[in-house]
Length: 380
Image 1 (tube, rainbow, N blue to C red):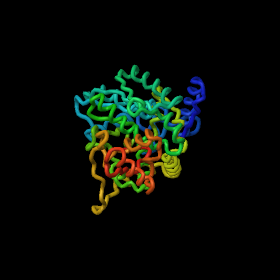
Image 2: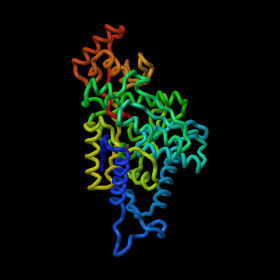
Image 3: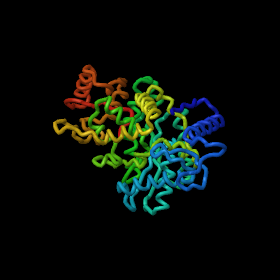
Image 4: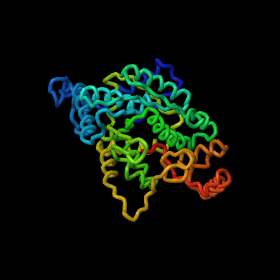
């Protein structure tokens, strides 16, 4: 189910809409009563069932749902050895339901099970008026609610551009490419400023399945081979972990039942994002077969890359030093185009653009060639 709330709504109207949305989700997942009363929880057999788990089709109450969900995340963390005592961990916080649930659950599990982690919130300000400024207010409240220090890094600070300025220049067709590339690097740079050991994100099973499908459609073998991994970037500056890697779309229900403070409005610049079409397709599959999401992820894990396939070799950008398989990282290529008034310089693989980049690079910095690979809206 996909939701889109207008940013023109007043705060009190938004709150009413969020409550309505959550009620619809709970109603859709709640078991139907038999006769005059509701069914009892299949785990405790004491309280009325409030929802049905997609994985097991068990009908459980809210309290057992909390316990099962949190224990599942704990098992993922322990079984995959995601953290070590004393590590500094940055939590990617956007203010949305996924990252808010992640911050809450990580804080609770760290306290309950004695992980011994130093947790921080890390937010990226893309500079989207009417969207990111509002969601950052939510993150600032989470900072107080969970007692976690917050670090905010902005595109303007790092790149000299906001997404409002980029969209004004390039329009809505390729803006997600800029945002995805800049955001990935901004998260790494923010994590470096916090001097953390790892970065955790709220990507869940739905997100992973979408990425598997997108990488297949793009023929992106390099990313397909790693997008289902629960930990990525070990060869990069800071490893990234996804504790919700196998968590299905009950994060919204968890946030609603727990009455967590989160922001629900979608980005105003993403209505035509490529990922959105993959999301709708997967949701259609899920309605027919509830386990379709998990099956797609399992298929992604089972893919094997031929030994004859040449994979890109990781190096460092000659311009900024960031990890890259090309001479210039994608962020530097896009930024160069923006600064020179040629915003489409780093987009696509057309021959003309490649020739233009090669020519321009020779003239500006003496480099023989400037190469870049196609980059999606969200990179794992």
